[in-house]
Amino acid sequence: MEWGLLETPILLTSTMSVGKVSDATVKWMTRRFPGIGDEYDVIIPIVGECDDSWLNDAVGRHVRSEHVYRAIEQASGGPVAEGSVGAGTGLITCDFKAGIGTSSRRVVIFRGNGETGPSYNLGVLVQTNFGIMRSLRIAGVPVGEILAPDYANDGKRVRNAGSIICVVATDAPLLPNQITRLCKRAALGIGRVGSFAAHASGEIIIGFSTANQVPRSTSGMTHQIEVLLDDACDGLYEAVVECTEEAIVNALCMAEDMRGQADHFAPALPLDDLAEILNRHHAAQQR
Image (cartoon, rainbow, N blue to C red; front, side, top):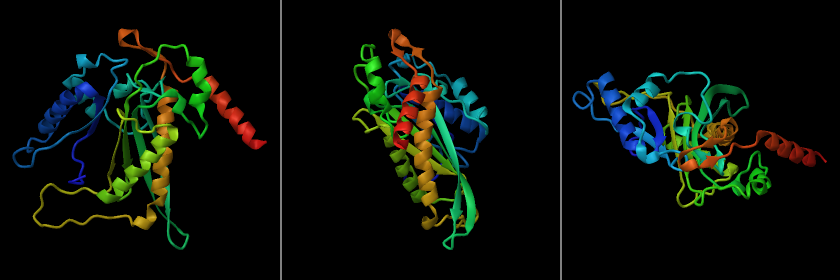
């Protein structure tokens, strides 16, 4: 918020492993860029976390430096693994097994005269771990309320707290304040799925644009960047709401049943029942 620049990878992990992941990131960065701390300023890694202690032995802090190195070095374009993977392995959303989810849009910008302008990519990745079952909504349908009676006798968590880390990425040329506005709209997508940002739930959103790079040092004191006008941002705002909602749903749909530490259990969202509920709702709307 203060600096407006992103200079390290964004790492996601378990709450108790933030320190270890941050330390490993510093090691990786300083080995790759030995001028850090001498020729260049120091770095502050960005590490997001969710409390996965219902399923995970969080206190064991089993994430090691080599896991961080591997995650950074194997990062690539293409399809993103979803569900119970990486930092999403031990996560639960609205009492169903969740994890990592992602979604993206190609946004076409229209000029004031209606002509087609440039187009940009916008993507959202979530590490989702919030909510209670009765709050779950998918495509506007109160899925959680409908499913809840089927799980009434299951041994669920007594305290349904958690968090969601939402990462918004775009190649649209945006200023830091515009990215902040984009992140605020992502919160609307989280709310669509059923979050009311409970007391112990950290709904945290971070965004960045890859369009402009600002040098750490230069012979001059100015640097030119490209900026999208505010009037052209509505398509991005709409896309980030849709992508956030869809990414959370994708995390739920890709996760499977999991039994974790202390024999705690998180059921997968029953996809056949979900399809029946949505089809029934759609049919009712057509009448």
